[in-house]
Image 1 (cartoon, rainbow, N blue to C red):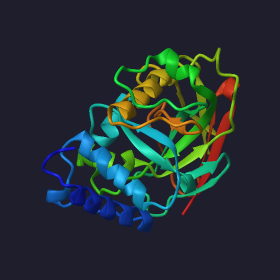
Image 2: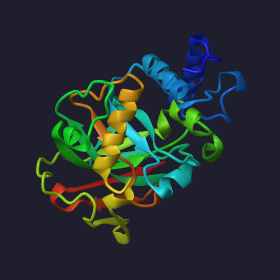
Image 3: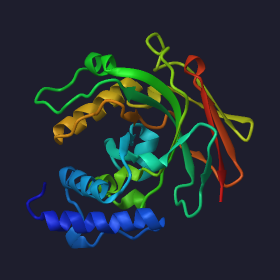
Image 4: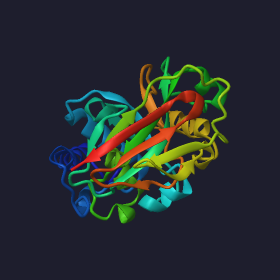
Length: 265
């Protein structure tokens, strides 16, 4: 953590973001003296926000794993954010877009861990990470930010802000993923019953399994475990889909099944 920030600073920043999160409001940015200046401080604020939140952490999201995703929020590498129990909805859910600034849906692979991968000195290789996975889920993320100008907030503040986590629609579990081609399988996407640009796992750091491995090692670097039972959603497989109240979206992940949701005010 940056030596210029005390634990009290971290907790004050977290309290501001937590209030915005609960009230579905936003700010122009954290006060200058509380604004995290490095990623480690961003994660410290996020951890403090998690302590304030009464909901269980059920997993992690990765933001900015594609060129489109990085452009969307103005960063040059991925960010990790906690997912909370009350924001994870089942497939078919109706998602409110009330006061949602981003107004997009992201088509993503989600992975559930069968066992915990604790922090350690050496990096986890992809094979070890995949061996810890029980199920894979088609999913849709509906992100949002507590910052009015999220594209210029910067990575440390965006990390503090849960990496733009908001609502996450988790499709049914599939165990039939061992032979699935995560890189090249076309994922058709329907918006209001009309086909739009398809999604591909190769848009997620070249391979969603690579993104998943990045997440495990990012947590490890900052002294955190990827815990058994947690779900990790690995980032958008195509440009975020602009949505508005009344819309519905469906993505077909082939052998892994499909996922859909609709949007209200």
